[in-house]
Length: 112
Image 1 (cartoon, rainbow, N blue to C red):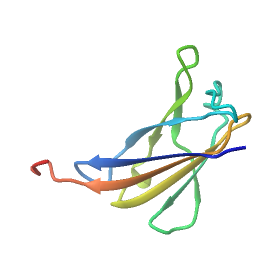
Image 2 (cartoon, helix red, strand yellow):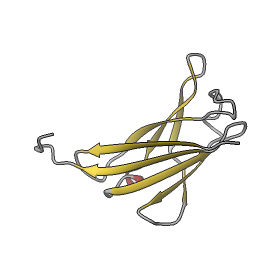
Image 3 (cartoon, rainbow, N blue to C red):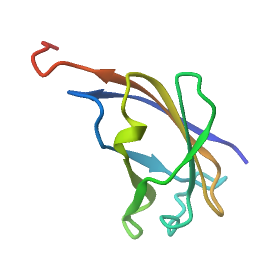
Image 4 (tube, rainbow, N blue to C red):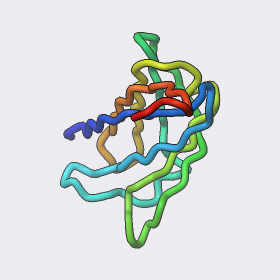
C-alpha cells in the first residue's frame, strides 16, 4: 500500500475555532473509497506532540460524484493554537491518508 500525503495551510481569524478540512481516502490504485464516514480512525499530532485519537464529525461529500472525499469538522480543541498539525486517517480498503497543515492565526485587520 502507498500512503497518501497532502499539505496545506489553515488561516483562521481567531483561535480556538471549529474548522472543516477535506480529506481524500484512496485505495492502492488511487480510486476513492466510498462509505467510510462511520469507519474512519483519525489521529492528530500538533507541534511535536504524540498522536492522539480524535473523533471529528465525518461526512462523505458525495458517494456518487466524489467517492472517497470526506469532510472532517475538527473540534475547537483540535484547532486551538498556531503551528504544525498532522492528521492521519485509516479506513477499510483505503491506504492511510496523511494531512499536514500549518495553522496560522491572522488578525481580521491584517492585509494579505
